[in-house]
Length: 156
Image 1: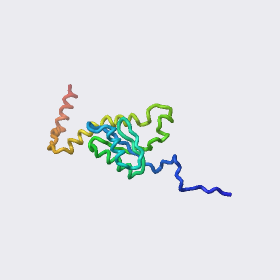
Image 2: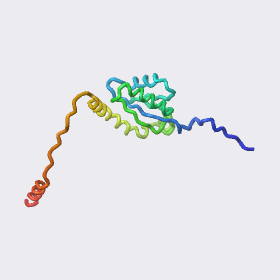
Image 3: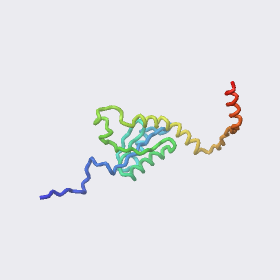
Image 4: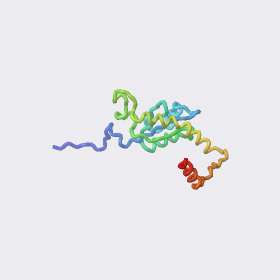
């Protein structure tokens, strides 16, 4: 007697088709809570986890992309999106299952988020109507002048 396995039932721990993005908010006008409200209002069937820096969104690729873009439209130059390798609630990342401590990669993410303000300000300037200033580069030094200086110091 052989047992028949149902192949159309998805294992609840299988997250191979789950797509996850991190949404980091570095805006003076949009708070992480505002980003969460925009994500919920988008109305897609995704998991949303609110964090101190923004959101983590997991679900179907198209749904996650649409929710992330809806949030980013609140302040395009100051809301940043990046892929995440683990879905929301994954036991490999959960502090409760790992007995506390910081998540792997937390400090890297913290450093990145700390720099987003400067990047956002640069994007504001880049996309503004202000005139572009052409950089003035210094003139190149003639190599023969450098050689003369080196010889002078060698003689001393």
